[in-house]
Amino acid sequence: MQKFNIVRNSKIQKTARVLQLTGLFDIPPTEKSELVWNVNLPIDEFDWQIGLIVGASGSGKSTLAKEAFKNSKYLLANQGYEWPKDKAVVDGFDSGMSIKEITGALSSVGFSSPPAWMRPFDCLSTGEQFRATLARAIIDPAQIVVVDEFTSVIDRTVAQIGSAAVSKAIKRNSTKKIVCVTCHYDVVEWLCPDWVVEMPKGEFTRRTLQRPKINLQIKRVHSSAWELFKHHHYLSSSHNNAAICFCGFINDRPVAFSSVLSFPHPISPGWREHRTVVLPDFQGLGIGNKMSEYVASLISATGKPFISTTANPAMATHRKRSSNWVQTKKMSLNSNGKGKTSDKILNRTAASTRFTAAFKYVGPTNKDDAFKFGLL
Image (cartoon, rainbow, N blue to C red; front, side):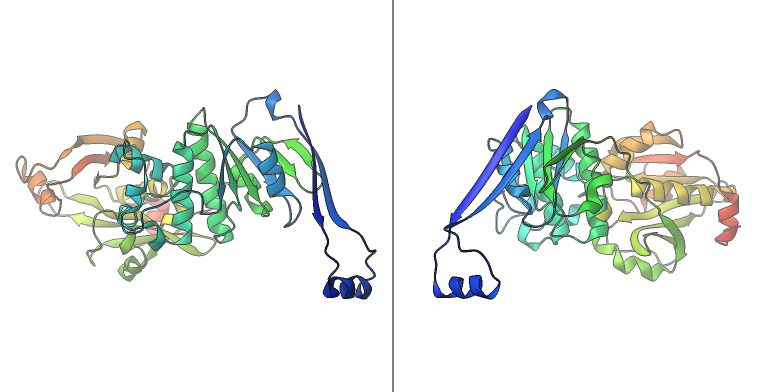
């Protein structure tokens, strides 16, 4: 067991203002100010990956983190790594990494927005900077990374979603450990730490938590809702106004968008997915896949097939593993109109310079909600 007896002293200079202060608030005169913390940290007695030091400002959180993990990588909020001023955020990663490894690291922490990947770090939102910093932390060669002021620069709903994404990413890497330092208690159950130290008392507890369920409410919306999401879609900001559109909400806040188009065919008409996108602050928890599959269950209730073509590797991987989808085309370049008539019609609106995979939805149908949304 590691035991820490931390003492911090600072000499007090008796200036005129200090003397006035001691008289005004009846503070006993002293030569120095002293703070003491006694903390037992038995983290060497069990396997762990995520630790949390929590407490109010001035309670000694950062002091403990720096003392207990002095040989580890230390980050402060969105600071700790150097980023090129005039280059894309993907150029801030080690030159030895492939673009696939870089985008995989960014996606693993819920930052899955290719248009944002092309911007310099300083041009990202604070939430995007938070995710980019964590992506660097996860691939950092240091076994333990300490992130101080964890989630302090983002709003609380985003902080909770981001904490869950970080937890998911860390636990996919069996060798990586992270210690988060924060004054916000609302991230505890979302981060699912293996241990928690609450300051200033230094109370240590082991935790086994289950992340709260995300209440995603889906509504049918006008195509104008695309304006909120168009800059975050990896493919294009264009959108067909004839599409049927849906929006996903968390705490009445729009976070995801999905739309579908009718696929005309004289013999086998159907539907195809047009656009699905999740705002960057809410990526990393599978919201896009849940949104897409829910909409597919509505559309398939019409009795017509629902197909989807995606260039998103994470979405393609999910669908290959899911019993709700059957893959109809492996990840490859589009056929440029060669092949069956139905393929030619689809390829009119599909790029031929992008690797894509195609899937057909074969999961359960949702006739009740389809009727509610006016699809039946």
